[in-house]
Length: 112
Image 1 (tube, one colour):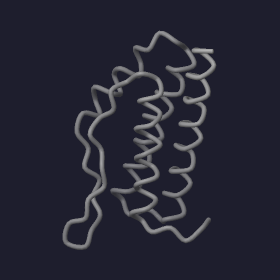
Image 2 (cartoon, helix red, strand yellow):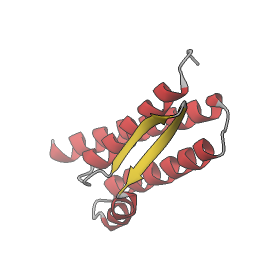
Image 3 (cartoon, helix red, strand yellow):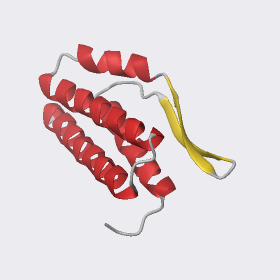
């Protein structure tokens, strides 16, 4: 693991999560990391609608990617809020990046 800050790990996880939802055609929620009084907080608006949309996707591969992204993101948020180690957060951010890659591949394959 390279030397990433907590903010960089959060930004990577957010980018992968939102990228996955966008790749499968779901309007991404408003999610970002913001710093308040020296603490980085995850600001999350509209996640429930995105999660519900993930389960309603007709394409099985897209649905699998979206539901997996929602689940891994949920775990990331849970660990973030409970001050998990940066290593654990980085592992989940990488998992989200892998899901994002699969979603992009699935979308490209479906349109080819």
